Image (cartoon, rainbow, N blue to C red; front, side):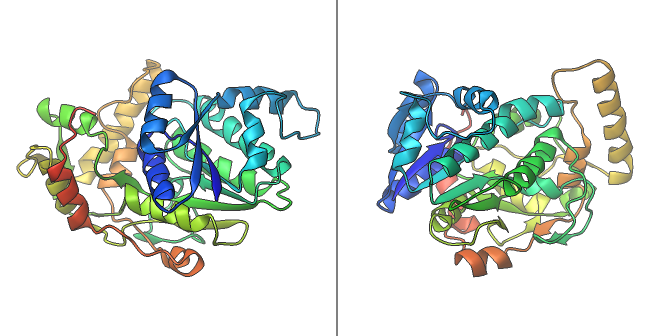
Length: 341
């Protein structure tokens, strides 16, 4: 197949390019900068120079007639591909909803409308499992669970993007939405974790005993490859390694692959950490801080409660089975340290 992909210079996007190329597909990777272009080409994609913002401006100026072309613009490639994989997104744990509406929602909707107008057969959207992080305290959730209200703007807008895309006319374009939780694997950016540990600010909540779920980046790429040909329009799937475990049991060996020891880090009970996070968030918002405080309610929901995702739907609708085990992923990271990325 010919596939158009956004976000190819990112951690997930680059892994998806490598997987699709290895499977024999031709990937056309969008890049808006020279640095992104180098990364997209290095991953194995054919380079498409352009910016999703051009498409947003065209989409919003359109008076209801959706056109798949910007004249001589890069979007003409949509008329030549079989599928689109939209992996581009600003990912941050702090910031107002408006920021993510501008950077994530509007480009995603504009690209989807253009793909539908160009009669692209498949559109795969990378969303996030955190759409159900916040109001839903269930220890295991699936796609029919109430998402509640996500507790950070990034996740709220991811959920809104899903909802608005699903409400759009789709004609012959089948939309499949993938929701991975914490992404990890060789080449991941651990700089934030490392800085926190080195500054002596890393700590567990409730001794790190709560269950978390996660997805190796190559497993996400595998699911994206399957979604190119499988799944009916409107399919939404959580995608994980199907190996949830305690926070301490996951992050201790993960950080150890980069020579970081957190086995003896301090621990605080959630009963203390949660109100402290609320106070820190309130003060940070009052000061209009551009950066997140050291402790937030997102961290509490991620590390301070049990959460796993049922992937039965991905197994049955996509034929998905994790391709990389946790042990294999850790071995890869040990062999290829990447602390500076």
